[in-house]
Figure 1 (cartoon, helix red, strand yellow):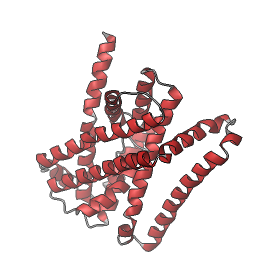
Figure 2 (cartoon, helix red, strand yellow):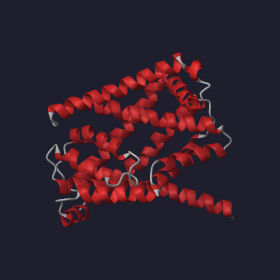
Figure 3 (cartoon, helix red, strand yellow):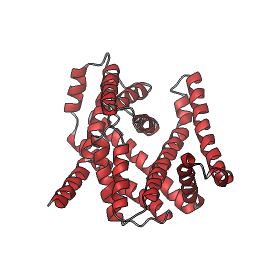
Figure 4 (tube, helix red, strand yellow):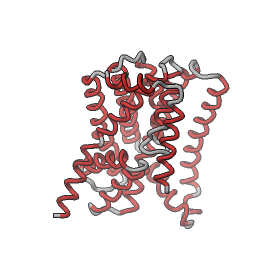
Length: 305
């Protein structure tokens, strides 16, 4: 039922986003895209597996979980495949957890490492959005901008409060079963960020990954002759990515298109061009998950034999 609901959400959002958009122009723009630019963007997106594997490996090492880099890389690639073929990104994370657990690691520790890795990625994209916030003030209405500012300040303050509570109240509420795992995750997150070098490294890897995605979108825009300045790609694409990872649709389809049309419309990109760019970017991300699918199928075939 959840999958059916997300399918309806994806199709509904795509239908709403494409209201007033000439579908024939969208198809024509995608069809005319330069294959060289698409190849460069695909290589960049696929190369992110190295960055994400390294970031997760650092978290694993900090939490004293033993996993070889090649195994980390394999699990990350397969998680890409499941992220694109299952109703949400939880499927990819679940496979990473299961795969690491099968390699002899403690289940709770592996779950914690994946969640901590996700939180680091979330913190990084929020910081990137905050850094670009002065530029967004020029693109958005003042009232809406101040609402966004208060929202991000609230998120940052919440993280700070949770860090303090995890240390000051950890012993008092640790016996509560419902919050025990939550406290354990916060303690692990604090452990990672307590080391300045490690924290700087994992955050730098996350910033670099979002930078690469912004470059990939910019290359796709160049390949379709869409007038999108690189600085706007760097400012707006992290916002699109943040919205598209919300677990309300199938692999972000529909949500990403609506966010792309709205955000790029702020800088004068026509809706049909923004829709074309979003669809092509989604297809590039989808193709980048195929190698992980091949690895998973080969392993499954080997186990069956």
